Length: 248
Ligand code: G3P
Image (spheres, rainbow, N blue to C red):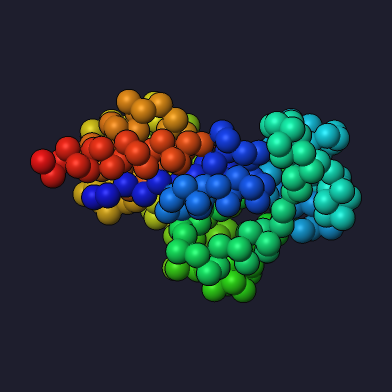
């Protein structure tokens, strides 16, 4: 099986994570998928940001949930990365989906409900996915099993992935119980037996965050469904080498 390369928060090594420049760069480099994170503002606008606070990735401080979208849109989400990206803005889930809609991209939206619950975020995200007709190429993921259950309840046809840093026992039944069809886990949990178990139960297995070339090569050899990487251009280079070696 050919592994799909997801640009993790966009091409987030070379451009500020979860901003338009990072998504555009990932797409230009040839990533087949984009991974991003969603949280809600004070006025319940879904915005793309990994942390609950804006401290690390903007020129201001505080929780996303305490600002309106209008307030956040005035801030600089690029300078922390490099002066080249000074003035990059936070973007809404809507802007992102509108941008992705006419590109052949798979999307992974991680609902960041592991620290704050953001009541109703599952309905909002699903509604926006449907609005942009992206249902068939979007995977929603979360570290929070309640979010997985709520998403599954809202639409059992949606591909939902449980995210976990831990090794899981009884993978198939654990995922099945909460309505998760796919499994997203850390590279350190990757093993041949995990790949085999996922394949035998038809569970898509995607691995994060794979930035080391030796780790990329192992993922490609094992045939995992997807990897999340901050360096999509590098991953695509190694993927090509592995594919050429397999065919020679
Ligand atoms: O979704 C894959 C990966 O992004 C999960 O970890 O901490 O980056 O949200 P984290």
